[in-house]
Length: 477
Ligand code: NAD
Image (cartoon, rainbow, N blue to C red; front, side, top):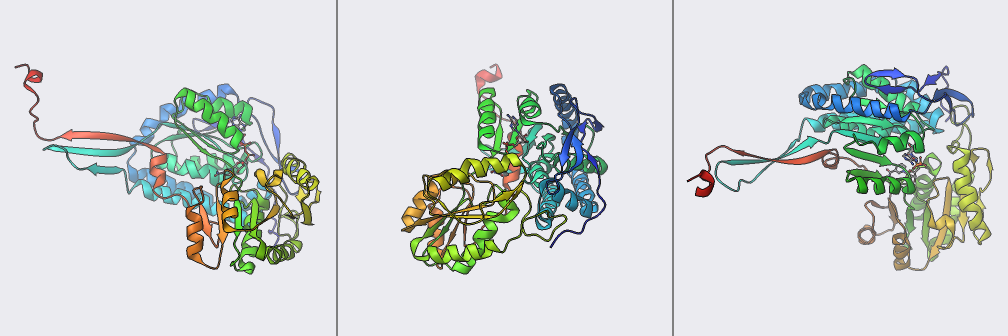
C-alpha cells in the first residue's frame, strides 16, 4: 500500500540550545526525501562552540530538573508523548520521506517513541532504589538511584526518532539533562521534531538540547566534551570503538549499541514455510537496514533447497520504489554511499568468489532489488560483515554443531533459530553467545528495569536513627 500523500512541508532542523532555536554555524545543507531525491528540508553543522554552550546550559539546568517531584516530571513526559501523538499524520509522512521507510515502519517508529516516553514516565514514579538489610541497630541503609548528570547522545539514521527516544525518555525521566546529536541524514525526525515537542511539553530550558551536524565535527566535539557524565552512542562498530577508546582514557561512563553480523539458522526439522516468511521479513524489513536484520542464513543441507525456493518465490514478488508515491513493498536504501558500501564492497566481491545470484543483485540509484545469494561460504565478505542492506546470503551447513560454530564465529546482536522442536531451539539458543536469540521468530521487546541501571548511578545512603557507641579512642576518652 502506498501512503496517502499530504501537502509537502518544508522543514528546518535548527540548533536547539537552552530552550531556543538558532541557526547552525555552518551553511545550510539539504535534507533529502530519500524516495524522490528532492530536498524537503535543511540543516547545518553545530560548531564546537555551540556544543560547548549546549553542554554548559544542560549542566546548569539539570539539578533543578532532577529536583522536580516525580509526578510533575511524569506529567511533562506524558505531555511530550501527547505532542508527538498530536502530530501523528505529519510525522508518519516525515519519517517515510526522511528515512525512505514504508508506512508500517514509520508507524512502528512513532509508536515506539510514544510508548518509550509513556513507559519511562510510569517507571520514574515506581522505583527509585531499595532498602538494604540493616547491619547494625538503628541503621537504615538505602540504595538509591540518582541521576548521572548530562548525557551526550549520538544516534544513527535508521530509526532516528525511536533510537533517540530509547535513551532520551529514560534519561530525562530519571532526572538527567540530554544533549542529542541526530544523524546528518535524519536531523528532522531525529532532532528538530523532538526539540519542538519537548519545548511544547514544558521540558525546562537547557534540560534538552539538539545539535544537528556531522560525525567527525559536531559528534566528535560532543563526545569529547568534558561536561558529559555519560556518553550514549548507537551506530557502527568502528565509531563505537573510537568513542569507547576515548571514554576509557577519560575515565568516563559510556554505553554503546553497535552493529552485528546476525545469523538466521534453519535446522533440518523446521517448518519451511514459516522459516522462509520470517527470514524474508527479518532480512528485508526496512530494506535490511536495522541492527537486528538477519544478515546471513545458515540452512541445514536437508532443507536447503526447499528453503531457498520458498525464499526466492517470496522475494521475486516484491516491488521496490518510492513508498510515498508508489504501491511498493520495499523503499529505497538510505543513500548511494550505503548502497556502494554493501553492493560494491560486499556483494560484488562475494559473487566474484563464487556466490550465485538467485534473484536481485541489480539497482537503480537507491532502489535496490532485494537479493538472494546462494553458495555463500563463510570466507566471503557478505558472510563476514554486517550487510545493512536488502541482501539474503544463504550458506548450507551439514549439522547443528556447524551452524552453532558459524553463528558464534562473528559478533552478533540478534539471532534466530527455526526448528520443529522448541526444546531443541532453546538448547541451541543457550549456546549462542549473544544477548538476543529467538526460537521460531525474529524480534523481541527491550527496555524494562534495565533502564534504571543504565541512566542513573547507585548511591548508598546510611541513615543512623539511634546513637552509636564508637570506640573509646574516637570519643576522646
Ligand atoms: P555511524 O557510526 O556512521 O553513525 C552513527 C552516528 O554517529 C551518526 O549520528 C554519525 O553522525 C555519528 N558519528 C559518525 N562518526 C562519528 C565520529 N567520529 N564521532 C562522533 N560521532 C560520529 O553509523 P550509521 O551508518 O549511521 O548506522 C548504522 C550502524 O548502526 C550499523 O552498524 C547498525 O547495526 C548500527 N545500529 C545499531 C543499533 C543498536 O541498537 N545496536 C541500532 C541501529 C543501528
